[in-house]
Length: 90
Image 1 (cartoon, helix red, strand yellow):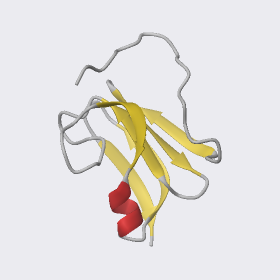
Image 2: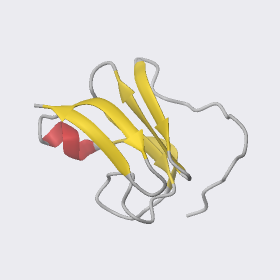
Image 3: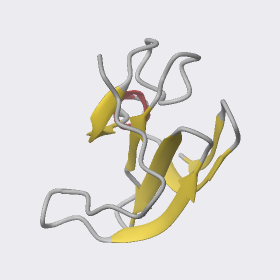
């Protein structure tokens, strides 16, 4: 999949009812935490840093379903160069 790399801010379409409470950017990926405790990620995913259980990349924000399935609430996210760290609550 082609992932566009932009050296400037760009608008991103998220579902209208989402309220973002935190955001972090890695070297080639981005993650946001919503007020409802959901985690959305997008960008380059070669090392699994998007958290979707694969190494696929995505230009569109996708909710990390594993957290929802496990009943975990994302509180904070920090992206490293090729990693994503998420502080969660049960």
